[in-house]
Length: 361
Image (cartoon, rainbow, N blue to C red; front, side, top):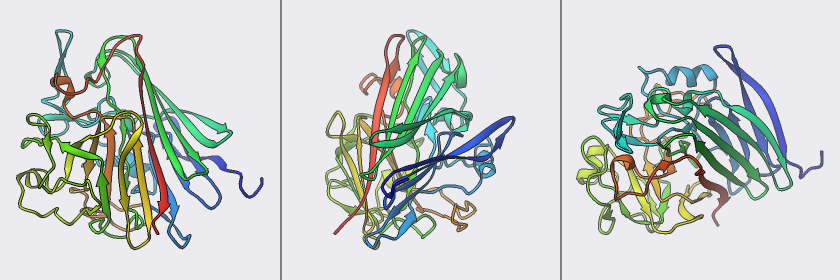
């Protein structure tokens, strides 16, 4: 293997029931190293160099498979570290929606809501995996068949999530799915970022810029209330780089109801376009994000606790990482004014999100 050739290898990571779980290591010399599990499609770690070339893992995760399985128990305060979310990312109010005059009831796992596909979503499944050796990237393709009625959702869905890592320090996530009956679908990845390094403390000094002039204000159950509202003059204006913690304690009813940021921003551009950028001033690490999705859920890790011990062996705690979840809007199945999440037979669900790691001057 020459010095500049990428690496792709598979490691046994553990077992869930009678299924082997593997970890796929994608690496470019001098660039990123990403570890992905076929359990939940989890990005377990992502090592990126700082401005001096020193690598650190910049996503939150657990060191062992048992930790992920334990965190996915119905009685656990699930955090979804690095996982593929489906069938429906974010919240559906009362866990209920009507499609083609048929009402569907989902299990409730977030107070009065269904959250992230319910108690046994895509993040709890072992996916089938195929290694990808392509001219400009290495990757892993994950496939899952979700049967009719899975999690209360109608129709059987064949879902596919493909991770690719290229020489330009870009990690792309491509989602594709089809259904054999009308259903709703909204997938995302739930990685938490800490650009100073996982387990290094909170992210409040790291800056964030969001390409969004509106966001969805929420009610006391974190369900969008009314039409999206302008960010102007509010702590939700991230159109210029702003420290995550600069206004997180401000006296604002939306920060109070969510205990920080946990809202959907309406992206200003459509198609595969710029969505967000974050920077850690100490290390110089810069995260740039593009997506085809209309919305971006920014979550500031408000409910992370110190009993969550990460891959470094260090405890996390409040604001130990932030999530940037590219997706359609929360509760869209109940909102005709929001972009539709309906998927019908003969249609193909498709979205792509790209994360690039670099360093600021």
